[in-house]
Image 1: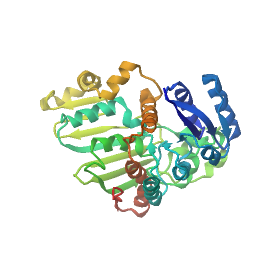
Image 2: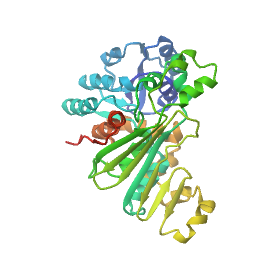
Image 3: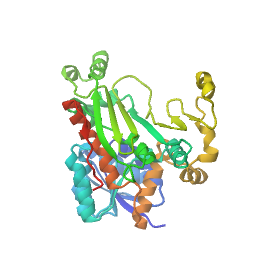
Image 4: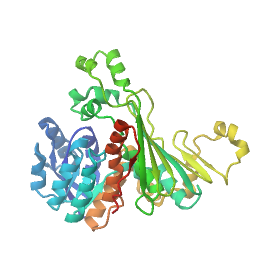
Length: 390
């Protein structure tokens, strides 16, 4: 089998955690690695050599990876470096697989579309949550009409990241600087990607307006006060990032999307994926499907007591074909298999010259939520959503 020779740029937690998966893939081979920290580069080289018996070249300057002209580059850096590296790689004619995060400006989103269009170089936005089994189950059911006409969708990134943020200096993690200096919906794509697929965004439907609200920022300071191992300098920091950010997006066809960022207060993990239509709904929190055809409104008071977590019962009939094949072949990779599915599709699309299902316009739309939310929060107003499809 032909393999895609790739260079990996960014070897922090995400890049290092993905490496065993990359080493196990039949259609991908790592030939170069890069990080600004030499110790990370050496750690990565050692891991790849141990897993594959082949030793990649290591760099601390990402330009060197591009100069080596691999078949593709994988960008797994902090958010702020994603697009500038992607632009240079595309201009060099090297296909890009880019990990997710919000953009830092609307101009960058337009530039992404412009550079990709002018160069014709593939840009693949690696939103793994679009490949989640429940997300694809619900999408399949929606396309078959079981939920009726979709009216509302919700999603969130609800993940306690207090230690990741507050120990950011020791761990060289980009989130600390972001939470100190920005107030926005900083990580919208995990929830917005699957919702966009359900609502046909950029495929007959589009985002029209966005309104965001941010709570006060109290969670990180409280955690620092009560944990002596946190850098004492951070006690004097007035964090800008609100603990809870709510973003409401109106769609052209009339659907309403509500996103929640919730990362600096104690809570269990949830992406809060919820789809509600005229004939039924799915809700991740409780993992249930409620359909008119299967349930009766007279049951709704005691329904939850008896039928929470019933979504698995719909897999037999409505599991997405991608997941049926994946289960048959054997589930691989992190995050329940989503990582393998998105990276395998990336490699197959580049090797076969086919289009990646998540387009640059999709990526621009999802990433634009971050700078638009910052404007909405700061100016306390609704903002129009750019029409990137033009």
